[in-house]
Amino acid sequence: MKTYFLLFAAFLFTILSIAQEKAEPWFKDGEAQIVPAFENQADWIRTDLWVETTFDTDGDGKPDRMHVDVTRPIQTETDGLKLPVIYESSPYFAGVAPETEGAFYNVYQELGDVSDPIVHPSVTRRGERPIISNSQIHTWVPRGFIVVHSSSPGTGLSQGSPTVGGDNESLAPKAVIDWLNGRAKGYTTPTGNEEVKAYWATGKVGMTGTSYNGTIPLAAATTGVEGLEAIIPIAPNTSYYHYYRSNGLVRSPGGYLGEDVDVLYDFIHSGDESKRAHNNAKYRDDEIIKGIDRKTGDYNEFWAGRDYLNDMEPMTAALFMAHGFNDWNVMPEHSFRIYKKAEEMGLPVKIYYHQKGHGGPPPLPMMNKWFTKYLFGIDNDIENGPKAWIVREDDDNNNPIPYANYPNPDAEKVMLNLIATSKNEGILTVEKTKKQGTRTLVDDYHFSGDSLAQLANSIHRLLFVTPVLKEDLHLSGLSKLNIKLASSKPAASLSVWMVSLPWNNAPDAKITDNIITRGWADPQNYKSISESEPLQPGTFYELSFDLQPDDQIIPAGQQIGLMIFSSDNKFTLLPKPGTILTIDLDETTIEIPVVGGTEVFKKAVAN
Image (cartoon, rainbow, N blue to C red; front, top):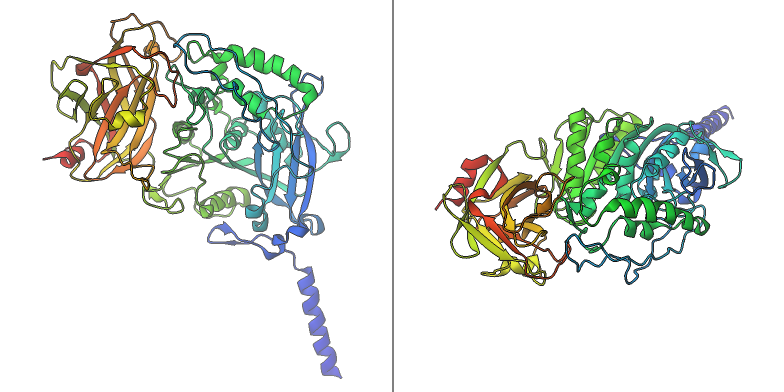
């Protein structure tokens, strides 16, 4: 009998110990691991609320409130467990405007003409409470994080107005982070006074998202809000000028010919229908349309206020940038410029680049370690070691190669000169030849850049190529064009592509096979992007500008080509054909970033 009671007591003690054992995050190899007790979706607590901000953009005399949802493990309620937050905010969660004829600007116009008005479609709001979005939750809740979403101002059930990069789009996520830290108020309804407290949050927040959803983490970080410890912006738009303009030129993002800030405003304005007339009059039809200046394309006060590089001084969050080198929508310069500034500021920084297009997060283990380090405080050394992780051309996005930094520290600028061999073709060489004279090209938007690169000769472009590479050549960083030109008209577009030839037209051609990098500029802005003036026909002007950042290995057997043309029919305004650009070859060069420098380049092209 005594043995029986001893066994029963031991069994009871074991049961009680298991019952009393609390589910908690655990870590292996510096990463937060999946906790079985956090995996049961039926146990997740999902709620929504409205966080009060410090601004009133819808003009009703009351601070705008942002719609927020929360998904957390039940243990944050039953066991008093406090956890950090992964937060994503977006203007897209509640739907977007339909494709409507005339909603984009007509690009078939002369440079400097006033654009025709556009059609303004309305968004039909969608979405049910309490779920704003399901993004992030299946990745992070099982690993011991709470996931929070919010709709940005004037979208979904969030009050206020979109401004497409205005201050309220930075202050809105700041308010949510303040609420998570007990510094702002949250309410159960958009107009009521019943408060909601974030008693389950540790106060440490990480943000991530792609495209516009990747812009908002940076916007929040530039406020210096306490509690935002780490961000992972993926393909973020970091400057609306760089998104819709290029070196003074009105230039559309790839795939959205004729889009501009007011078009995007209409696309996301899914908020309260009763407030739209006020919002449209104040923001779209006044601030935005007056500020974008499609006539000159100059950088002005409006654009400066929507350039997050100008706002970075208060930023303290650890920054892990991610982007694709062949993203021709939000181009790779957006991440590069912010990364370099954050590095200069001494912030913890890393950058991940892949070879594909728009979107594409870093490998999950890297993201996990970043958030685990800064939100849980686990010493996993992620902040040290290589700063740059680059996916090579034939590799999977989950297999980046570490480099000490980006650009590759071993890359050096190699100056290539243009030597004509025929009317519109020639070679690129490190040798300098005098008295090359000039060559001309005739603008005609009917010829795409792809087709021009494949033509043996054409009056519509100049094409200069290196000798055939005998060895692979690694490029890393920014190529820079220095050009001296004249135009037959007071305004003209300038488009520049670096290409890998021969062009691969095979169905299985990789995205890296043909276009190395590109750039665009308005010669009227030869002084600066903030100042343009009509060109005097026949007068030569000098300008220099960077092409998009790249890191690419050009294989042996290929040639690197510099193609100069005018209208780019996938990106620029498209005036009537016939404008003539004259290029002074003696005063035109391209600097390319070669890993190993001039000697490596000479060896690669040696006969």
